[in-house]
Length: 276
Length: 251
View 1 (cartoon, rainbow over the protein chains, first blue to last red):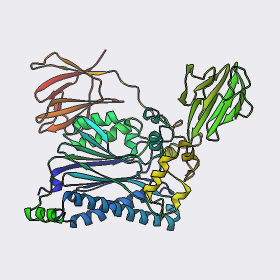
View 2 (cartoon, one colour):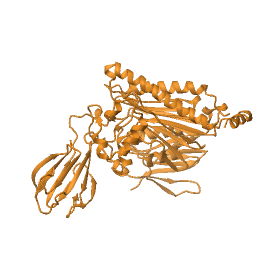
View 3 (cartoon, rainbow over the protein chains, first blue to last red):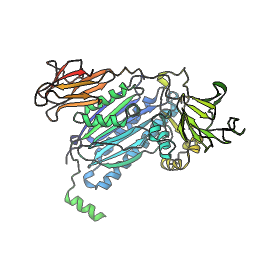
């Protein structure tokens, strides 16, 4: 089996932007597990970075550890996918409890929370979980698609037809999320799986990118610079700062170089088939 | 908080804060903004406010509603818009408190309903029920957590440099010698994929060239620029994958 770290090229970058003194965004990668993560902290008395930092470490380390032990070669793709989704939900729930408890016990942390988007690449699939308005995009061929749906007031308004997508750009309610990690005693990550094709480029980003740079500009940057993902990451952050850089801006780029299907022996395949 | 300033013939009559979700405008006295004039319908229009955004909707009035001179049924109000009903004008003002610092702008806040505090309600159920309710109940049943929910726009407009004139490159050698290319896109790649590629970036403060791929770096005026971005100036000669080009600004 091809190792996942050899099938993916990952580049990440986080920047405070041009107006904020603090950077409350965190990014993480665990390339041996095919794991990438991004969190955008908020609230508390300047404790947003505590929430995003805690959530990043807890989810990235916990998921990485469990995933290293998973024997994907002994299960079929459907089972692997269910396990990935399950583990993402578990670790997000666990991190939520930890951040929420810290917020309850330390007055300066009161009200802190964070968005989170985490992706796990395995067996030619990507399972992604998210909470809040940090996004996952995919560039496939010439087309850029947003694969996550923001948990935000604005997205709900768009869904209800109260406001059009064009009007949404003028809204003053951009910064209101309807789901966040650490704010309530319990939260559930929204989890979906997608088929991955070599040549795809995936982008995790905080709203500091997509509020400042429109989707067409993001598409053009990824399409033009995908041969050098580190440079593409730098250009995205630079474009956000050139447009005002009003918020922290973070990106994680993942380019899929090769197929990374799990190799399963005939014996395992037969056993799996008999169990059905 | 946003407000409407009612005037007729340039004379200001009154100011109305948009302090509730629906503010009605019409001839009848039970409207929030009564406008006693025969050109105004009994129930003429309504302003719907959702946190920091306000929308004007004409309620099927006889004589219609204009916003900034154009007849509209529904309009997303922006600061400074003028709504006209008959001879009366309503100016929409949505100012951000001047004491707000840039640091406080656009801080992400969490919105939740009181029932969110009950942990037994799963997030999925909650979202499903939220999408069923209309815009009115969505807003009235929520409370904003935190104290600094503010209109994000207004004070701290970023200082963006005046856009420079459009840059161009002209090929100096090879079979494409003489050909020109306007650098209108924010990113333009030059070179041969797999061999050597560089990108010219159009930014508010000018044009820059950066190495993208290949073993050798772009050369500007005979010197390699390395892996870093380099600013381009009038008449710079760029060399990528054996092709020489001159950079200049369109006149």
